[in-house]
Length: 441
Picture 1 (cartoon, rainbow, N blue to C red):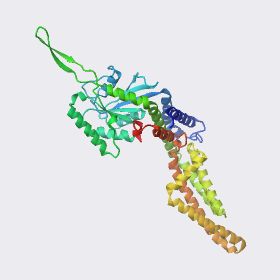
Picture 2: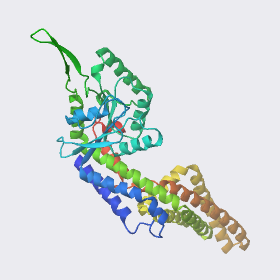
Picture 3: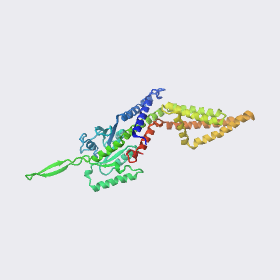
Picture 4: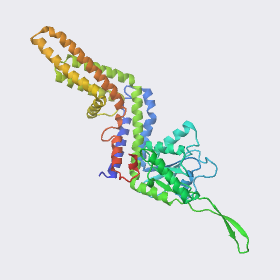
């Protein structure tokens, strides 16, 4: 099993490699110059750099999510051991995200707690964008509920799971529910979990707390017989959540940090690739048609069947490299070969039929060529017809390869031994089955 320290180093190297590549003056969105493309990818380059810096800074970000009045700010206050954030009975005390440093000793990892407005408090696109941005930045999410789960909460949980975000379900305000109510609510959570093909969460991911227990009005009889009323403020019941977070971070903190940095980098790289492909579409179309013509001509004029196949393969590989060069995507000759094989498999019978037909026509063309030279000059007509058919088929196959390569190249920046996809898969594979990261598979 590979040590986490080694995987962490691989993650750092992968991000540094990406920064070096995309910051290089050799990037082909600058050659030939394209101001539209440079402007389009500027924000994605910032995100890529920020992901690299995040890994170097060793700061774990833990965000609270939930609806209004679930006690998200109170949870953070209880974890901190002091009332840093304003709380109150009025809905929507937290209007904008707030970050607070949590001084907790966890293997030299710094922790930042992020308080967010209620998911049902900000309407429309603003809420969706804010929630998406914070969730992407966060390494661990505390989803705070209080009582029965609403449909909004359930859908938010589904979305977080689909975005591969590790989370702890925090059941707050348990002081307001008797034991029977707690049991019934827990059963509801399990039923909701069982309704999906893959459970939303396991029992280990649910923590019961009371971040800010309700005050108790006490009647005290004094020595003179008079009655005095005093309010007692019970201490937060937060220890179980503190222990859960500490356990996760001590065991998986480095992995969580690496995964989220790599995931952010992956999103940025794919956005860069997608925008590059869109803006370079006209030039790419010209390249595809040019190589389709090259392949058609090479196959048509060549009289030897084996050289037909070999020449067509070399043309396709060169086209793939030319497309990658136009897009400025990192791809080697070896990776171009792997991509060609993948494309052939994805197109299935279509390209297989082309290859078989080209081979058969190639033998017919070779036979006609030999016959025309030594026996029957009139067979030149057969040779020309066969060559035209074979060349047309080869050119069409090359066009299909080029169009399909555009789709695959959109994800090409994450390939290779040092690609973010490879490192992400390796980190997840190395985690124990009971880890919170293993739930992301």
